[in-house]
Image (cartoon, rainbow, N blue to C red):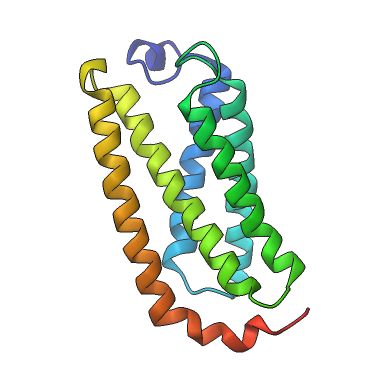
Length: 169
């Protein structure tokens, strides 16, 4: 762990836990995004992503290294918690329109995770003079790319699952 502290990557066991589950969240979130939706594989990887994200968010709420208290990162973690919760709630509830709501919430959950990744890279590898500029630019690009990717995938692929949307089980 001293090696990681020396390079300002991880400062505590909590930080290491957060780093590990966040990294796994990025991997599993990307796998969900890149694979076919509605399959058993999608559900298993998706539930794994959700569990990893909840641990990531829990550890993020405990950490206060950046500002010594509640920070903008905690604010975005709270938004991520709501987005993730609403995303997983939709297929459990199965009300009309659940499929698109699930798709939107979970897609934005992954986009938010990528945004957090860029912020984390900024905190670890950029001088504080450039940090906010790098993070803002990355966040804007991340959001634009995420928006168009979600819109494109929804327009091209979500209609395949419309009959699935009316199922109640």
